[in-house]
Image (cartoon, rainbow, N blue to C red; front, side, top):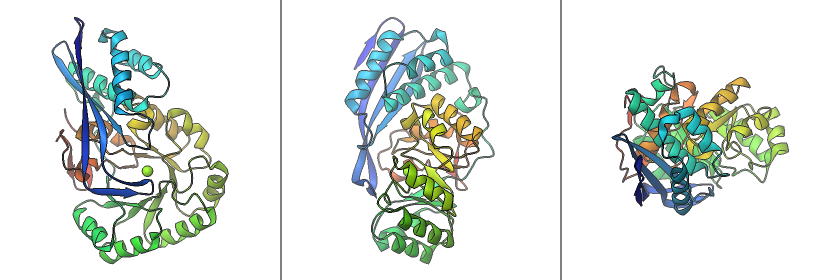
Length: 337
Ligand code: MG
C-alpha cells in the first residue's frame, strides 16, 4: 500500500526469499523466508528498509504492515532527527522487533543519504579492519556437506549447524575436506542434556571449532551456567539474547552474544547491544536471519565492532532483489552507499 500526506510517501511490499537449497537447522527445514520491504520517500530521497520473518519469530508480514503503517501515520516528519525518531520507534508498541528493524534500517538509510555519507560513517564507525565473515553450511547428507564446503571458496571461517542426531559425523565429514576453523551453531539442539553438550564441546575443541552458539534451551539459565563454568570453548548466546535488556542478564553465563537487527529492532538497538556486551567483556558476533542484501548490508555497518560476522545470507539465496553486498578475502565489504 501507499499513501501521501504532503510530507512522505511509503510503500510496503511482501517478498518470499528463496534458498538455493532447502535449509535445515535444529528448528526444521524450509525453502525460504517471508520478507517485507519498505520504501520511504521524503524530500526526494528514497530509502529502503527490510523485515525478515522466519517462522520461529513472532512477527509476520501482516504484523509488519500494521506496525509500519501505524508508525508512519503518526511520524511523517523526519525533521526531529534520527536519535529522537529511533527512540520513539523503540517505544512505539511492544515487541514488533522485525518491524522496528525495517523502519530503523529505512531511517538510517534516509539520514545517511541526506548527509551524503555511508551509514557506518554517519554512526562514527570504521570500515576497516573488518572481522572474518562466516560461510554457513546447513545440515545435509555427506555429499551435500562436501559440496557446500567447496562452495565456501575464499571464506576462511565456516559456520556449521549442529543439534541433529549425527553431529560427530558432520564434523568428521567436514574435516575430511577442510582444516578451516569452524563456528558451530546448535540452535538449542542439545537442550535435553547438558552433560552431553559438555562432552560434545570438549570433542569439538579437538576438531578446530572456535566457538559454540546456543547449545542449550534459551531459558535454561542453570544448565547454561553449569556448562559455561566447564566449557573449553566460548559459548555465544543467540536465541537467548534477543534484545538489549538480555545482555546484562546473560553476562555471567555466556561468553558472547549474537546481535541481529531483526531480533533487537535495528541498527540503533544493535549498536547499543554491542556497547553493552563490550561493557561486560563479552564477545560480539553480528549475525542475521535469512535476509536480502538490503538488511545484510545494513548489519554490515556494525562489522568493525564485531569479533566475527555471520552475514553470508545473499550467498545462500537465489532471488535476492538487492544485489548490493560484496565479499572479498573472506570478509564482507562495507558499502560506501
Ligand atoms: Mg544462531
